[in-house]
Image 1 (spheres, rainbow, N blue to C red):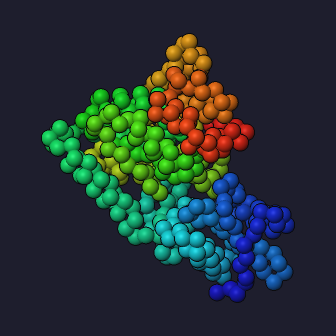
Image 2 (cartoon, rainbow, N blue to C red):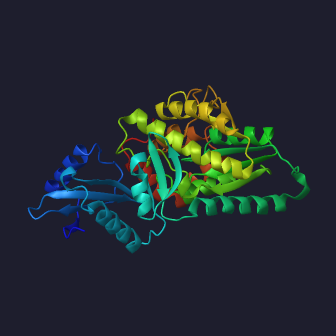
Image 3 (cartoon, helix red, strand yellow):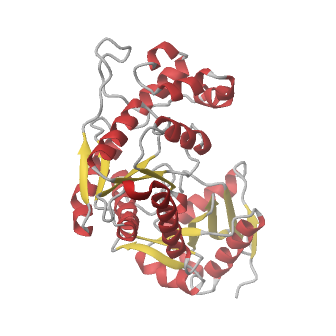
Length: 365
């Protein structure tokens, strides 16, 4: 094992960051846009010969110079990153790696969750982590069904939605109401990753308040296994389309296991014709979900009234965020449920509004 030292690399250290960029590039890796800690290993001449980074509870952007491979440097980098994560309270860790590297990380204590052959492997440091998550979903479902009593058939038609709701709009409500009208039971997974302008605690509250009138909903926090496109790793994907495709394939593999555990037969998604990301994602979903025995229903987007401020366009959370940024609350009345509007008109929303208004661009494509 090498005795080379490992140090944190700060964003202001331009020289070391330039070295890391060159090392990553030489190993076929692009620096990920989402990093909150980076370390470097220096040789005796102060050249960075290995590096690794973190974001949230993930390990990312790990590389060793080709001139030093086989010296155990990656083991040292991973051990350093794990220790750092533990020091800030992140005990449940995840990483994404190329398929040919999965065995190496398996030897370091990481366990495969899902694999997309030729693309990516999603791993965690808990042997039964994902199985425990599925068991938790079953317990939540059993508890909810027990509270509903005889109103639910013994073998209910069961659907699912996955919703970020940044924030919750009439478009989201339309999608949920359609799924609930066409099925006996609907599992609503709320993306709990805090990567949105509206914090998860607020998004969850607005979803549940806006759908409180629907008796056949079961709410689930998505947990760490359903990740957003904002934080899906891009560092070893060849281009942006490959990133979107890999995220979709991985997410759908995870969802297929969830669907099997909860007997979900159909997933509802909203059409989003102006979004490149959603267009690719929906296409792959329509191709892949039926292979797992799950139908995919793409619902045309609900449109605002023609006389509204948005001129009859499809309702989107991006439009709502833009109106919030501009302080155009009257324009929101046709776009969001009363509960969402009440929240943003209340003093409680001031920190969230300040965050939205500080963003240069709140429209996501």
